[in-house]
Amino acid sequence: MSHVIAITQEIEVIVDLNTVIKYHPASAAYLIGKDQKEYKTKFNLKLLVEKKDEGDVIHPDYKYADIVDRILPDPRHEMNLLVLVKNMVEMEWGYYQTYYIEGDDETSSRNLHMEVIQHLKELKILVGLIEDSNGSNIVGKLNQTELRKAGDKDRCYNVEGMQIEFSNETEVKQVIELLANNRIKELAKQEYYYYNFYHEDFTAYTTTQIQGAIDRMALPFRDYRAKWLFCRHVSKTVLQYLKGEMEWNQGNIDVTENQGVFIHTLLSLFDLIDIEQELKNITARDKAKYVRSLFRSDLKDKDEEFIRFTKTRDCTDFKFDDNQWFRVTQI
Image (cartoon, one colour):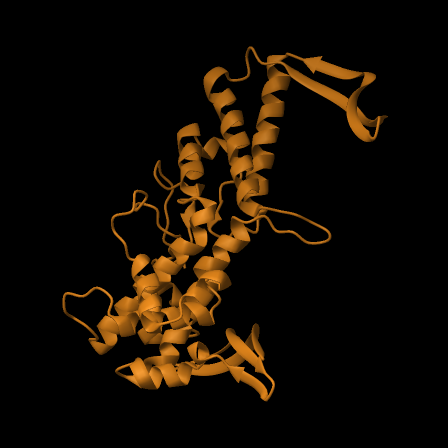
């Protein structure tokens, strides 16, 4: 009798990071200095273990060293390839998980991406009001509310006699400007490192510029496609490494069976394949077929791509204009 369970195992490796950077430029973030030759790192891999009467046995699909010896033309690259995928998981996938997925724990539930989007939309409205009318024909209202029981639920009601309306153009303008500058301060202190806001006064921005920021914040794919698209991104990057560093399969076949098996192994080790699908991919042909499906070019929604980080020039090199009103700190 036996059954299979998933466990994690921490490994420590030392690799030539400069080779990894050739295929994943964002990995340069891990460089300590320009002359750094080696990169030492620890990370976890997923293993499937078969629990048998005679003891636990690692599933053959997860014996990375054996697969490398059997398939990889140049085993010297085995650790580089692990680190390549590890860095992509930490950076691109980690970025998506942190800034686009609502966090959930005992004390809070936040989606930083949506918070920033909301601040930008409110800032656009406020700046638009100033641009369009400079505060005329706008009415402000202060209203105190309180929670009261309504059956089994608490509902919000206005407190009687605790409302103030104002239409004085000077007062309205002052309130709009205060709110606009407060929104900019909120944007500046967000944990959202992807964009940095420098000017602390609303006069530095126009509604056109703000809409450009909102557009750039938009998720370029649908949430339910995230893992599939990320696997596609990883698979394409690994294949570029295999062909570029080992000149493995420079012919007409896009992905050979052995390449498919090797890429499938990396996806499995980093827990990027749903377990139900993974258990269906039994043979080498099954694994290669699954990986090849990630390279299909006949998809109706083929324009969707996962988030990609690129290495930019010195982060101090930026300018404010209609196309880029904040610094994009892509790693």
